[in-house]
Image (cartoon, rainbow, N blue to C red):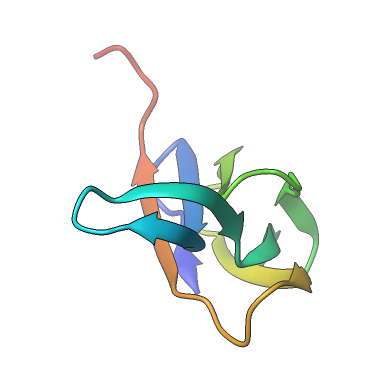
Length: 102
């Protein structure tokens, strides 16, 4: 659970890798670079209501930036839409922040 108390906004991001192929080492010139998966990001509030969704199909990252409610908590879910590999590395990060100009 991600607390949203005391901030105005919550940003959650996921990123994953791709597989390069037909590479000439040591120059690293590759002829193709295939995404290992199509993953989607959902953010839900403490009641399970969907409050953020990122579901692009052609990138290796998803990002949700939502307004928060004081005292609420949030959960991030990663959904696998498709995959081209037996596994992929995934990174997750989040930040609760204020968007005031003070």
